[in-house]
Length: 134
Image (tube, rainbow, N blue to C red; front, top):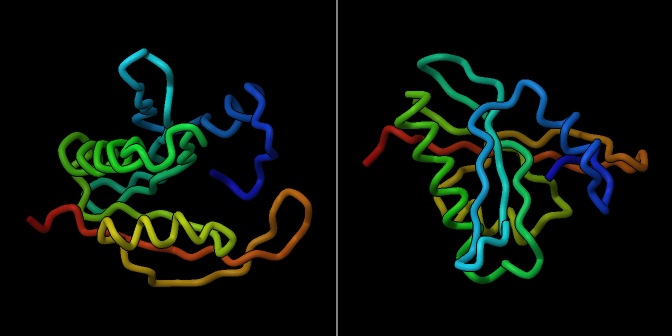
C-alpha cells in the first residue's frame, strides 16, 4: 500500500495519500462491498505513470479481486492515459505482491533503500510493465 501509511488505515491517511492521484478505482463484490482500491500518480505524458496505493481486503485475497483491480489499472494507463509503461514499487516485505506482479508481467528494474513509518529500512523494488505490447 505505502511504506508511510500505518495499519489500520484511517480515512485521514487515505485522503492525504491520494492528493494529486489519478484514476482512483475501487473493485466491489456482488454485494457491493469494496474489495480493492488503487490509483495512479506521476504521469509523464506519452511515457509512463505509476500504480499507487494498491489495497486489497484480506477477505478478498485469493478471489481474483486483485487481478481484476490491476488489470483495470493497466487498461486505464493504456487506454485513458495513453502511456507506454506502468511502473510500481513493491516492498521486499510483500512477497505475495512481488510474486503476483511478476505473474502479471511486471519486471523488476531497480532496488532502492526506503524507510517505513517505523523507521525500519526496507527495499523498494521498482517494477514496470509495457502496456503497448499485445
